[in-house]
Amino acid sequence: MLEHSYYAALGLSSIHEKVLSGERLAPEDGLKLFHCPDITAVGALAMHDRCRRHAHKAYYVVNRQINYTNVCVNGCTFCAFRRDSEEEPGAFTLTIDDILTRLHEAYAAALHLDELHIVGGCHPSRRLAWFEEMLHAVHASKPNLPIKAFTPVEIAHFANMEGISTLDVLKRLQKAGLVMMPGGGAEIFDETLRRQICPHKADASTWLRVSGEAHSLGIVTNCIMLFGHLETLEQRIDHLCRLRDQQDKSGGFTCFIPLPFLTENSRLKLPDDKIGPQRGLDQLKTIAVSRLMLDNIPHIKAYWIMLGQKLAPTALWFGADDLDGTIVEERIGHMAGASSAQGMTVSELEHVIRESGFTPVRRNATFSTLNTAEASQ
Ligand code: V47
Image (cartoon, rainbow, N blue to C red):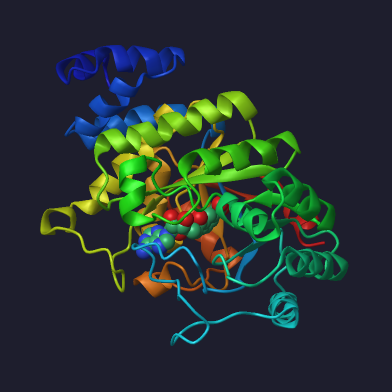
């Protein structure tokens, strides 16, 4: 940990003291950290916090992602994955058999999954009964496999389609086998910016309310922030503080995932000063500030698909403690130009974690740690 005098010279004296004593940072502290040009000073604070929680452990999960459709009514400007209708080139919608086939292929390839991650676009006609049937079918096929599915945005969409409450949707899906929800759709909470990049998507208060409802039922969830587009640093801090406030109330966020915006094939065009090689530093700093601001969320994920396979392990030194997983097939990032692989093997993940100076820890969807013998049952 760097010397107090070093932080004093950077004008970060009180932040340094707060981090050492475990005191909560104020929004202005987060902004100061963002404005600090010395990335190693910010990173060392985040590393201190991360080591206090997780020592030198770095988590990964043996998982498979499945996107059931990319047809979506929301029309978000940043999204290269979505198609507005079934007729548009590149549109796809899977059947339950397609999903089961992908699941069985994973096991046939000797991948003993500890998480099945299922999300999709907000399809205009697929009804809640189909999703219940799909969860039942997956659960019947692999009863011990934790299913992490549907963002708060999808839950709000199902509720609108059925004319029922989001709480009732959650109860029905939980009964059908849902144990955990991913954090997508949060994007950036600021209302003005949301009107620009995702005007038809569930709004910030709905996203937060649905997350809280899930927590009240015992469904743990994740949360994301999409950054590196048109947002200001103040809007990033506002986003983190809204998540922190929600977590104070409902307590069920397990992991925060800062997602850097990938620009290829996106209708959202960025000004030149927003794109460039400096984005790597901004991504590391955002991970570090997130670790320091979100004192009540246990895990910070460096999602290797979006960050890239070089920056994600580097982020373990900047406050992140999780790399996500084997994935197998990824579409949202790759349709937006991600240059990472489609998946990584367990030995690749463990190797990169070890080579980066950390101890690999295998976990399941809800972050229970597994020993290797238990994991491969
Ligand atoms: O909400 C869409 C993002 C998210 C782009 O909970 C983009 O464990 C970058 O939430 N560039 C969906 N990002 C993915 C997601 C996720 C992924 C992995 C793990 C978990 C988890 C959640 O993807 C969307 C949006 O923010 N996204 N387009 C893009 N062009």
